[in-house]
Image (cartoon, rainbow over all chains, first blue to last red):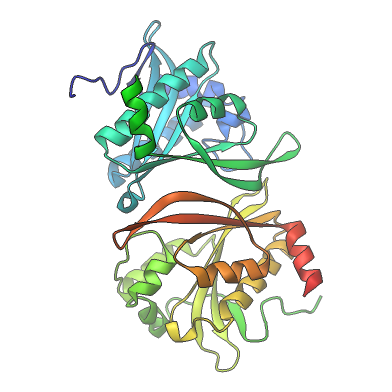
Length: 190
Length: 184
């Protein structure tokens, strides 16, 4: 049981934010407004390394002080390269709910990195934090990410109609949810 | 253009003067049923001073209103609008009537209507969102009356009283608000 690795998968591993090197890399991804959107209120904009460093510093400080958020980086084992960011919010602890957000940067195997990071995050949330359910929010146009979450068993529970504006168009915001009781049976199959 | 946007037939909404309304702040802070209808955070007892500190920190930059009865100018509850996305024109709305003797009298529905009118005709929003607990049918009915549509539920999200309850999400688009205005 305790030998099951929590922070290591096939091609990725989870680590802590390195404020010296990571902000520059992540800022570089924010030309993609879908990524920039995770860091800024709308309207999102591309961010500089300095802005990203300040943002991450604040976020880490708040997480440390509140104990209501965990922040991990996703690293590729091969090149030891930064591939993404995982945040797990436990603000609503009295209900046993985690808010999960996984950001994967633009790389060849980004969706494989997402798939593996999701598996690690779910095991951590259900078997280490012992929570009851996980909330994920995706914009309607994130088709590839939605497929990864749906394959992991997430259910589409809420569609907030026309709640997001991108590329000259209103889109829905999709709220996905997964209960521990839905995740657990899947583990037996692996 | 001289319409008083914030005045209805039973209530009006005004700015909230936390330093003046100490009696009002005391009422809501003792009723655990009110607290458990109002929010997902564990019910807690805050002193008037703690509450005033909270408002001092959060009120600037937020759209927070006090609801007062027209008949006797009594403060009975609060309503707040939180824009979360200006590009999409989306804001969250939340309301609470503090004293149970003021529940079920249409005050909340009317106050919501006043703030929705402000949200669409002044803030130029595209939609207003809210969430409501499965065990609060009075609120659900009020929102439906105003034109809100259910957009889904986070299943078994709330853990209260030894039971799990759904968290219901509702939303109203500008076009739906306008249709509602036409029909009333």
